[in-house]
Length: 305
Image (cartoon, rainbow, N blue to C red; front, top):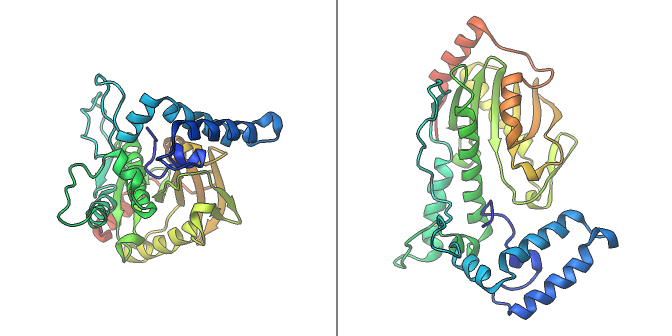
C-alpha cells in the first residue's frame, strides 16, 4: 500500500486508467521501463517508481488486493489510514509535555469534506478505506496526508523527553493558517510545519519549490504565523522548520536562511530528533530562567484551533 494518501497510485505512475486491462498495464510497464532506464538516459527515481508500481498491480491477485485496499491474504493486517491507538509506552522514561491535538483539525476537516464528496445519505462505512481515499479529489487526499505527517512529528516530539514541551495545532487566526507544532527545549524555540506534498521538492532562495506547491510559499507563511505567536506571547523563535517525508528531500536537512532572526530549515522527518536535541547550526540556545519564562509565556498565550 502507498505510504501516503497523496502518493501517485500505480496506475498514475504507469499512465493508465485504473480500469485498464492487464495487457494494457503490461504494455505501459514495458514502454516506461525502456523510457526511464538509467542506461538509456532515463531518470533513476522514475525507473524505480515504475518497478514498484508494477509490483503492486502487475499480478492480477495483487492488483485485486490493491484495488480493494486490503491485503491479498486474510492473515495480513488490513491497511488503514485511520487514527492510531496510542501504544503502551515500552519504557518508563518521562515523555515530552504535550498540549493540543496533533493532526486533529485536518482529520476533522477531512471527515466533513469526505462526507460531502460521497454524498449525504450515502453509506460511508470506512472514510479511511484506501480504495476510497485513492479515488477522492487531491485536496481531500492532501488533508489526510498532512494529518498523518503531523501525527508522525508528534510521536517524534513525545520521545524527546521531559526537557521539551510541545503545543500542537496552534492558532494564528484562520484554522488553515495554524502552526502545526510549537516546540520549546534547551536548544531553542521552534515553529514547525509537518508537510507531505506526495513527491520530492527542492529549495531556492529561502523557499520550497515543486510542482505540487504551485505559487505557495510555505516558509514565508510559517514566518508570518510565527510573528503572530511571537507578538501574542512576547517570545522570539529560534528556528522555523518545515518537516517532510524522508524521500521528499535530497539532503537530511538544509538551512535556507533567516526570517526576523529565526533560522529557517527544511528537514527530513528522520532528522528532526537530532536537530531538536543538538540544536540548529548557529541558533542560540535557551536555558535556566529564560527557558522557564518562555514556557510560562507560551502556556498563557497560546490558543488552539
